[in-house]
Length: 236
Image (cartoon, rainbow, N blue to C red; front, top):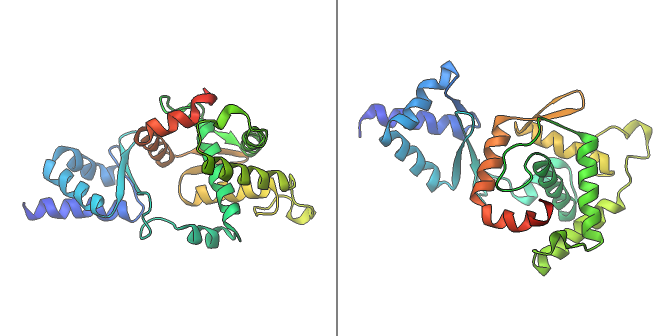
């Protein structure tokens, strides 16, 4: 393998690993994108390096992105990492954040066989989506009948926590702040985190998914197609 091939592969590897992306239509990265797909040795070396680190490469709109694989404690977040980052106290609060992220995903992708269905979402729409899903769980409807008993109990615990929270903070000074003490606060906290991860951009009260979000969402749907199809069967 030539030194140039190794150098190019390492440049691609380093840029993606540091949180950047490589796009075909961006002058600064176009050559790297072409090398990734046009040079089989570069492609194989980059793929092997990320595979060894349990990191997945996704493509969307002629751009490359990476995400840590499941259980990757080095390049991903552990539950404790996220609790510290978000200022949460207990796992149930963190699982509620996961549940909100899941509902945000479903606002744009209705099932594992479809592509993005809308351009943006408002906080109030996401809050309503979470409330509707939590209500279905509490009422034990057949929406989640495909889940196992342990999963059902986990979802119910999260739904009950959601119902315990007030709509917004009692203190007027904190009414519009992100936090864990209200439904609106924890939805804002979640969306702020997703913005920090470059998955959403916000304009006024609208949240637009980035290409990184689309790459990870559609890649995840494809990878987990069978599992997600069963989970979403009642939502179609």
